Length: 217
Image 1 (cartoon, rainbow, N blue to C red):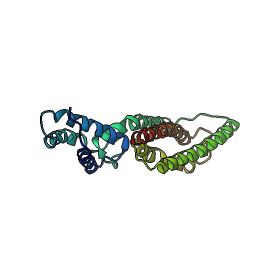
Image 2 (image 1 turned 120 degrees about the horizontal axis):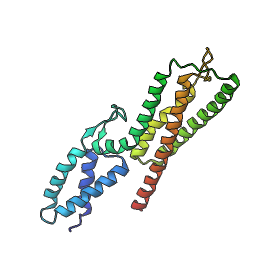
Image 3 (image 1 turned 135 degrees about the vertical axis):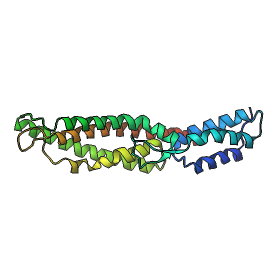
Image 4 (image 1 turned 30 degrees about the vertical axis):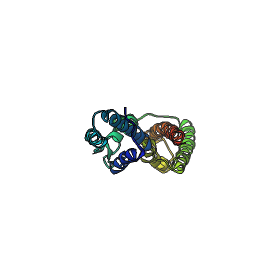
């Protein structure tokens, strides 16, 4: 099997640049696949013909696409969207489920003790501010790494906006009529789901950065 030259690999890199494949984890994966497929094909045809044949296949996978689970405003190559959905879809379903339950419980009235609510309020406020601070620090460290991954994109688009959580909770889980404030509780659950996703994406991003650094060294 013929190995590609640096100049030939550079042509593949330019092709991926034109397809706006900027996230390093997906790019390395696609680059390895394309190189392998071209090397196998060059046993019988020239590099140029093999490259054209492989591009024909990958053009479909690198077409621009979007997903309801990520937000239709975000348009990325299809292969990127499919990877992002693995994390974005379960998160979106959790959020939608909480929203649906919140709607079902809008007329639910449950008397609770004022003292219990005061304790819940205090613990929730502490949690919200700590989680917002951690999300902000995580975003700063990811940005500081200066390497774009699919995980960093998801963190910035699906997690980082929730630093506004402290401004979305108004300080009381008790309504004026003495029942539980369903909106406040839903926001608290949102924060738990967001932090869970944030931790997962943060770890994945820096694992990818480490692998990339080792590969380049």
